[in-house]
Image (cartoon, rainbow over all chains, first blue to last red; front, side, top):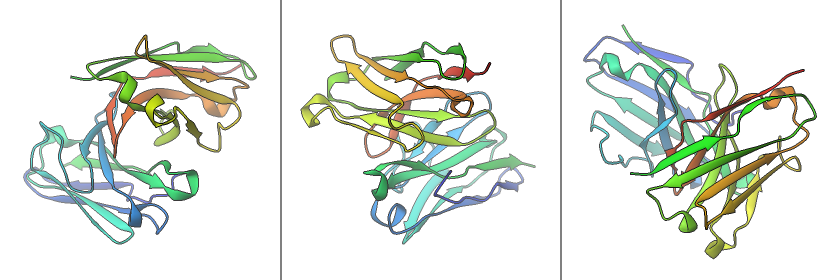
Length: 111
Length: 118
């Protein structure tokens, strides 16, 4: 049962921008780093944002992250067909001895 | 480049046991905190548990649904992580991924499927 809430789906045309929200609480997002994961169909998740807004090597700057209070946001600009995937936010939960928690997941569709 | 390769998945009856392995390369495994994350068919990601590096105590933490049934261990001489699963339930059916853990789940294996069914 996810403790972080995301919209089930978002969609936009190629070249447009989508934003995905991730809502948590004071025991998780508010006091911990947030990360984001991209899961292309049939593959393992891949880290695309860590420490709220940093990108691992090789991740294009079309992907950006931010955090404010108990919520975080992933933005994808210049949307491409290859961006069609499920996206999950993640952080740590104090009540679980800082165990990992993930969002409910958002399906991005390129129209 | 970090590579993680899981193995050991398969079909097991409810109440049965199974041990998963994850072999790492491209990382100083003995220094790494490692986690298991699972994904039930058609569902989202669920953290299963972690093991800290021995230099950080080598201790473990588990998610509530698996606590007292699953055990995570490591063999630093073999760069291998383990997940011993006992008293398996149908709801444990999932793809199980091993990951390195820093301030995020940095690198992921390809996953191994565990199916619990009679």
